Length: 264
Image (cartoon, rainbow, N blue to C red; front, side):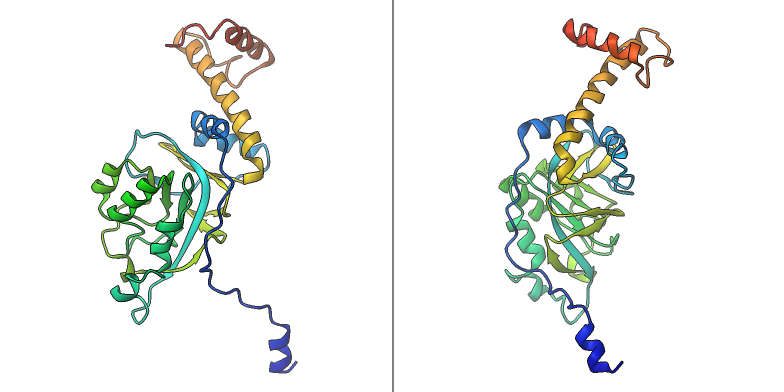
């Protein structure tokens, strides 16, 4: 086959994404509350029932523990390694820089998910960007890289998750190439609009079409665990209690019908 024939048959190379970010359909308050109540580890268990095993980001943890859970549809930014002739401070200051655009265009209520290919050689975000996202109503930020100005970012109150501190300037190591395209973050596939849940246990990614179903089942599982924890504090054995059995489920239903006595 000639070179021309190979060129004709070659798949087109996707253009670098730079168009306006789509407005994601917002999550209902019910789904948000159910996911936040259930937590990332319980949600991961529920996704396993759907055959989804790789849903928890590896090595990604909260910048500041003990905060409220982060829930929202994913809006994505992808970095590749920087190159000195392109990644200058002048180019970084441009209003067309995709990193800066992501901060201004990530929809309110969404979670900005950053594919930094695991690199902490440059910052995925600093405190000024975090403050701007907080002011715009974004639900949080996740990166498999790291942040600079970590103390100041924590002070904004914006839920943020990363692998660890990355004090060097972004253009030293990271070049932004795409907004709102499928990415990998912490070894997990993230498609724009997928639902991201972050808490002290980690960050889980839920396919959007499963979000409402998984949220309802996970919230119910979390409620049963409240009952089980109460029984364990009273001295009951795990056997016949956790995991739930048909008999313990009946006990749980009776407990719920009685107003959940014993919970503070």
